[in-house]
Image 1 (cartoon, one colour):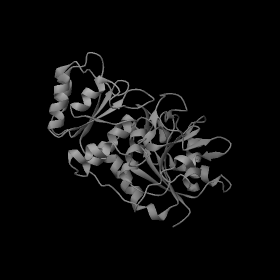
Image 2: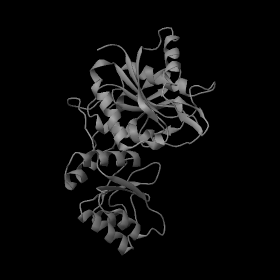
Image 3: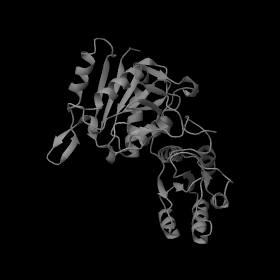
Image 4: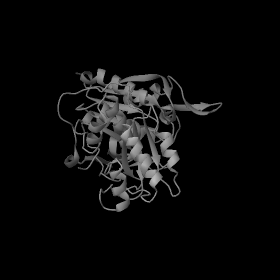
Length: 335
C-alpha cells in the first residue's frame, strides 16, 4: 500500500466550467487545478492518484447505479491507498455518502465525500479549501468511515443533509455531532467513531426499487395507493413530528396495510430537522405502525432511502428488511 490518497471525481460544481447552457461538468477540466494545489503545498498534502468518471455528471442526474459504480471503484482500490476522496455535486451528495456507508461495509479506511458551491476554477471558490481538508482527513486515518466534509465540519456520511442551497456551510448533521471540526486544527471526535467490524466488503447492485413520500395536510390515500404498485419494493414515509400521520383517514391506513401486505417495506421517518420517530408516543403514530409500517427512529430521509435500497437489493425478505431498518448498521441510527 502506498501513502497516496485516491481522488475520484464524479462531477458536480467543483469541476464545472461555463458553457453556452450554463455551468456544467467537463471531462479533463478539474485535474490541472488539483495537481497544482498538491504540487504547491510544500509537502503538506499527500500525493494523489486521480480518476474521473467518464463522463462526469451533475449530481442532479445521479442514480443508484452511480452509487454502485462509485462503490466498486473504491472497493477495487481499497488496498492500494491510505485514504479516499470522492468529489461530488452537492444536490445529492448526502444520498451518495449515505449509500456508500451501506455499500462498503467495514471498509476500514477514510472515505471523504466533498465538493463545492463555487467551481474551483473561479478565484473565490470554496472548492480549494474543501478539497484540501478532504485530503488531510483522508490521509490522517483516524476517521475510518464514510464522511462528508464541507465548510468547517466533517460529518458522518449517513447523518448529513443539505441545509443551504447557496451558503458555503451547506451541510449539517442535526441528529449527531460532527466527526471533526475544521478550524486552525482538524479536531476529531473519537467518541462517536464508527469503523465497522468484520472483513471489508462490497454490496453489488442492482439495488431495490424504492421511493420517498412526504405527508401533508389533505394528503390523498389514492396517491399512496398509486405509488405502491410494482415494481416498488420499499417506501420512506416522511411523517409529522414523532412519526405521526392522519390516523382518522381510514383510506390512508388501508393503503398502508395493503402495501405492507403486498410485501412493500414502509419506513416512517420524521420531517423535522431534529428529533426522532417515537413509537407509541401518539395514537396517530401508533396507527401507522399497526398498519404495518416500521419506525426509522432518527434516520435522515437520505439514509433511510439508500439503506432501504441496499437491503432490498440483497434479496432479503420483507420481514428481514423491516427488522434491519430498525437496527444500526453503519452508524446511521441511534439505537
